[in-house]
Image 1 (cartoon, rainbow, N blue to C red):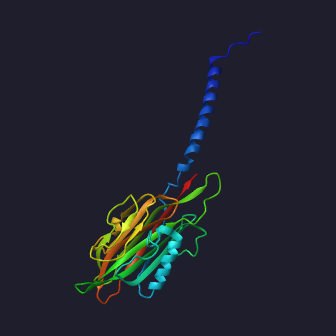
Image 2: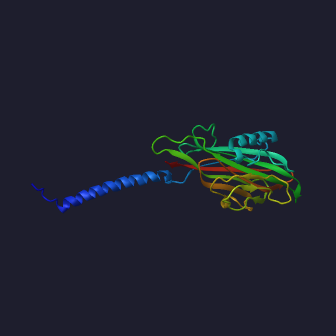
Image 3: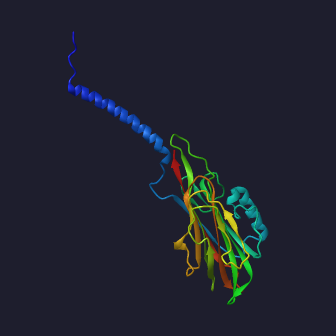
Length: 280
């Protein structure tokens, strides 16, 4: 007995079912291939901000600062306070003091302004501003100084578990200084422009100063002056890195500043850290 011929409607329904199944598989495959690019982009990266004021009572001594830079060298390698150099470079300046700050972001993305440890943190930033007197550089009754600014970010936490694990990534790191005190005056600073290729070389702002210098690697992204927190009229200078990096990154900068001859350097140090999570 011959089977009755299939209707055109039945054949069309079967074709559509097969096509839908194929598209579903292809769609899942395509989605799986893109999971590595999915990021928590609903809101800007979580950000932590911290700072400290330079006061004689809270500043590090020369020996304490040497110990601090050694620890950061061991922690960050070529992203330490003096970059690729193992120790402070030779110069003719006189150390005055150094002021430090550490900030963090919890695994949930909440700012931790004074982290006690790193176990439950998504990201951590260490920063310092060191002040050095420039000998024989006194003009209009003001003593001139070179300020050395440095900050570095790291990712101490482990990635999340599960089929869509989240891995932290540094997105922004900034260090800045704002001069305070009567008669404070901001001088030239460096770097003074955007850079997207490393290493970033930092040296004295004035050519006649035998001062501090270093070379900092640029793993990815770019470094730039922060215009909204930089200006001679505001006695302020800030320098930042921004990018997308799952390792360590540092920023360093320097500026010249002056205060009244009898006044010690007075300024506020600020650090900003942003980090988010990428999904795999």
